[in-house]
Length: 168
Image 1 (spheres, rainbow, N blue to C red):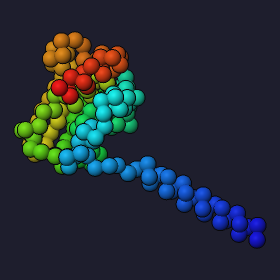
Image 2: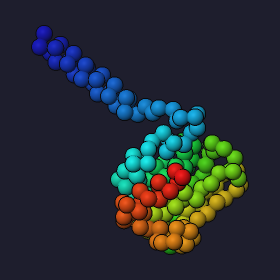
Image 3: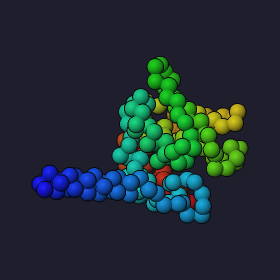
Image 4: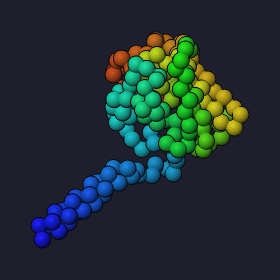
């Protein structure tokens, strides 16, 4: 009887753990029916996610994957990544497999800037889909911002200001 009670407790514990794990994996649909996860979270939550995932190296693939989503390139599964980590210039290529809207009408500057700012040694971001490419280098992003893009990953206030400027 003791063995049976122990088995029942383990089974119930496993079911509860599974339910909690699955609950953590669900997401709410974005407002307005879009596919951009950044549209459903506020600026503060987005800044917190970007700040938490920032990394010194493009080779830190788990953090770079998280940052690509945090930056607003789309939900996981709508893109694949290639990380160029063996020699400079270090780069990330985001290959969109299921773009939410036509490539030519999508502005990739903000998510590319966020990615460049939150990965210290990242030199360039390339976005591709259906034979089209958008590229942004850290130097180009810095020139557009009027300051070093890397401050987005070292100064939380600068990151917050940049994200708020995107809301205007």
